[in-house]
Structure formats: structure tokens, C-alpha cells
Length: 245
Length: 361
Image 1 (spheres, each protein chain N blue to C red):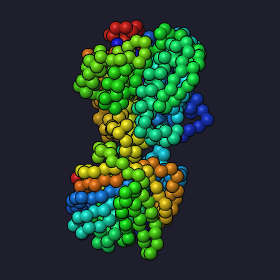
Image 2 (image 1 turned 45 degrees about the vertical axis):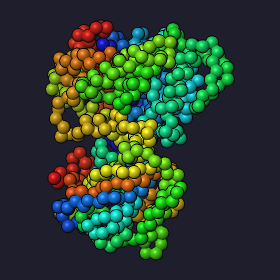
Image 3 (image 1 turned 90 degrees about the horizontal axis):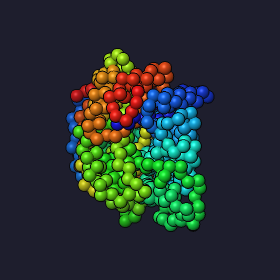
């Protein structure tokens, strides 16, 4: 069998988001702008990955910075760092850390989808030769990155991998599958450049970036959907998955 | 219809000093038996860095060992990766020729370009240009095998006038194939007069349509070699057992294990947006098929798992679809004990092969 994650969930259980329930209503999120970078990481990230999941080969992370121009809590930006993995046979991005640009958004994301979101400042800017993003918390930079030399591609060339969050819900720690839909209007790709990454600030102190893979940016109508599946973080997903609806 | 074996050489964890050797030894024993039983060919892939899924980076070495212990089974060198960072084309031509000589003219050559970020990035190769380099390679190889002197100036490699030695044993040269995972690649094969070496487990209707288009298209081809190889090969699982239910159960475990390991791979498309890789190829299908322990014990459509009658019916359907050859994966990560794998081969040869032309029991 492939390797599994090696996270002792108990060590982080007290800091996990507390969800209200699994009856989360969907949010429609039109006209979103999504910047995503993928970067390989050094061995050692398995200590951050729940035992239900397999690490990717090679191990890598994605940085996803999204500007939601409309939402039920108003416009907001969301930055995520995801450790990429497999849930059984399915690629998934395990959300290590998240920053939302408004307190309302951070609170809703924690309570409804289990994102480990905290408030912070996010900037997403387009230049002629790059698309750059930065994230600050409590007065200091914790992430600075860019897609460099964008070139247009077809929307069908991009693949967005569903996320999983780790949260307390219904009296237990569970993995929550978050699987948005995307209708892409524009898409571009480029080189990935991360100029600053404070791994510990994203609950990923063991992460050490190595080889940039790719970067993409798109405009898309998307959503945060109702929760369909939850998983026991300690059991391989082929046995530990529960269908919610 | 002809039958062959197809090796990824998967090695399950935990890896011990002997585990890789055991996998290779078992495979060699299987090939030796397959040769005696009348199987027509054995293929070995080229893969790198694909933990557990494939520990087969040097197929020509494995195939040399196969050739040395067999008398008539053909040896399929491939998929050899036609990307310059992986293999220089001169080396491909030379290694093919040596294997062809040592095997007494039993080589077939399968060409491809890799579909995983794991491998391409491992060699620092750009996914954007692999199709173009593959095209350049397949046009050069036959000329390198057949020309007294060869020189070339291309986009991806060049060489001054030299004599490439040795020459292949077969005349004019070994049959050439293209690995087909993504829909449409079979047309690239047809346009160049190359055999379609299917690596997906696709369903009858879809495959029949693609084969028909391949047959139509290859009539109009401009062959890159000295002759047209218009054969269609596909891959399948094989586990044959007297008890149909037992065969299905064990075979399904093997297939699920293979699919599970394959799904761990990091395809180019998963993370690197590129027109060069418009589909995930093999992986989405495997992810659908790998359904875990709750799956029913029914074989998937067209899979050769179960009793001889069921397998014969499946192969008759493939034959009717236009498939000329079927290459079998007969084990994955040592899921099935070696003695049972050998028994499956013997039963298949005794009960199934006689129902098809061109093979002997």
C-alpha cells in the first residue's frame, strides 16, 4: 500500500475549527478570480497529513488565493495553503491554513466548511508581466508569491482539485470534503515564484519548498457547495468515508 | 488474436533487500512459462520514480533476460520514452538493435512520451514539447536502423554523419508502436503507419469506435518506417481460475490494487496546465474502476477475470471490436501468489487460447 499521512490528530484537535453541523447551505460565488501555484516540497510533510490520506508522489503544496467579488458575507479574499494528497484514489488538497480578508468570511468559513481560516490582509494584483499576491497577519508578511509571464490557455487546460478540511463537528474530528464547481471564463498559466513563505504561520512548519511546478490564474463562477462526504481522519478513506447527502 | 504479457513490475512496500529481486525473478519465471505455453509477446514499460507502481526503468535489460531464457516469445521494448532528457535517440536505436540481435529478431518497439509530472520533472523535461520530440524520434529511428550512414539536424537533437551500429537483426526493422492512453493518440499512430498499443481498459463501444477510425485513417498514412504496422493491441487484466467466482474475486483484488497504485501517480494534467496533455489518459478511468472493498465482485466490462468461459466471451468481444492483440497484466504488487499466477497462465493456455486463431495450446 502507498504511504499514509502521519499526523497525530490529537496534537492539533484543540485548535481545529468548530463547525455548527453538516447541514451547510451552498454559497454561489460568481466572478471569482483564482490564483494557484503548485510547488514541490521536501520529504517530511507527512507529519502534517492525517492518517486517512496518502501523500502525493512527489509531495507538493498548492497556494490558492481567491478574490470572491460577491458572496453572502460580501466581497472577500481567501488564501489557502494546501498539502496535496490522495483520498484513496482521488487527488485532494488538505487545507493546512487559511486566511480570509474579513472577519465575517473567516468565521463563516470555519463554521460552515471547516476551513482553519483566520482574519488577515490579502492583496491580489495583476500586472502586465505577473499576477502577484501577498498575505499579512498581525502586521507581518506570511506569504508573497506570483505567477510570472502569464500566457492564455484554455479553461479546459486547468484542473482544480477538491479540498478537504479538518474540523470538529458532531462531537468528533472529521475530514470534510469541499468540492466546488467551476465555470471558467478566462485562464492563463505561468511560472510559479514564491518569494516569502512563513510555513509555521500556515500550520505547516514542516513544509520546506523545493521545486516550483506551475502557476495559473482564472476568472470563474464557482461556489462553496453543500457538504457531501466526511471522512474519519484516522481510517483509510475506502473504509472511513461517510456520505452526508 | 494474439496474446502477450505486459509488465510494470510493481513492488509493494515494505521494500526489503529481496523484494525487488523477487518481483523480477517471478516475472522471468512467468515469461519462461508463457513462452512454453504459446503466448506471443512480452512487453515491459519504461517508468521512473513511480513508487510501488512500477520499478522498471530499464526494460531492455529485463527483456534481454527474457530473451535469453525463451525461444520464441517476442519482446516488446516499451514504452520507451521518446523525450531527449530521458533517452538519446541514438541510444534507443543502439539498444534496440542489440536486443534484436540477442533475441534473434524478436523485438517490437513501443514509443511514448510519459504522462506523469513525477517522471518528466524528475528528468527536468518540459511537458509542453514531449509530443513534438516524440514525433521527431519516431521519424528518425527507422532511418537510423536502416541507413548505412545517418545524419540529422532537428529541433530536439542533431548529429553529424555517422554509422550507427549494430543494425537491427530483423529486416527491414522491428515493428513500431505508439502507446495510446489519451483519446486521439491512436490517430497519431495511424497517421504515421504505427501500431496502436492501447494502454487503457476501455469499454467495448468506445474502443470499437476508436479502432474503426484508426483503421480508416491508417489507409491514408505516410509511414515513418519501411512498412506499415496496422495492428491494434490492447491491455487487460488476466486471472483465470476453474471456479469462476474465485477467479473473479482474486482477479478483482489484483485489478483494484493496480488501479489504486496507478491513481497515486501525479499526472501532468493534475498540476501543469498544458495543451500537450489534454486529458488525464489512463487515470480517470482507473479512479472510476478502483472502487475499494465495497465493490461488487463482477468483473468490469471486457476484463479477463474469472473462469475460462467468461474470459473467452470477453476476448471474443474484443476480437469483434477489431483488436489484434491483448497484453495481460497478470499480477500487481504480488497480490496473487506466484503459484496461482502460473496456474492461471496454464489454464488460460489450455482452455481459452484454442478458441482463437494464431495461438496454440
